[in-house]
Length: 245
Ligand code: NAI
Image (cartoon, rainbow, N blue to C red; front, side, top):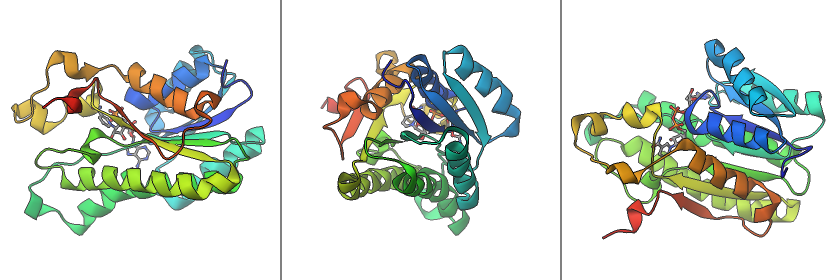
């Protein structure tokens, strides 16, 4: 039970990698704050995480791009349970457009969720977590290699790796670790709704598609004391897809 007595926040926890991660941490004894974007998913998310074995659960309505909403979520966590031990910045959006078509609103949406939303949680984690706290940011293999039509997403995910590195450096004296995972193709709605996949512009062999639970396991490791000497790392969880020539 690596997370017994620990309080962890998982953003974008209503499905996919976020829910798998929240359930994995719950099964290891955590008290879980599930930051969920849509009110319609609050109750079912809370139930799924409780059923996975959580010591306690709070499903918190939170748009991660809204600085005040993030502050309410982190303050509410500490008010409820008196501590914060871990944050998993998993919420993400991916839009598709030709390189010369992006607008200011497009950039604001993607950076607001995928990068700056993670920063709001990391900033609060720095202020609220005691020594031994840990942050895991869910980036993407698009931080390293990418495909056409996803310039804002690839840029945001690459910047998130950089932001993780900065947090690791400045977190050292506070005893706070920060790492990133870079998932490859993972079987979630985000993968199947990807127009590049739907159109066949990007093909993925079945053996290159991983389950959300495989990413959750890597996140749980990096968040746990098993990774006490690992910080500033960017861990690919892609089944070796990017390792091939
Ligand atoms: P998903 O679409 O199921 O999860 C994204 C979650 O983020 C959803 O629960 C959504 O409600 C939430 N979200 C979106 N905007 C939000 C906001 N403003 N505030 C709070 N929550 C918000 O897809 P998936 O695949 O589980 O994605 C999770 C993370 O994994 C994302 O950051 C994604 O970029 C990343 N990822 C996914 C890959 C895949 O193949 N599925 C590959 C690489 C990275």
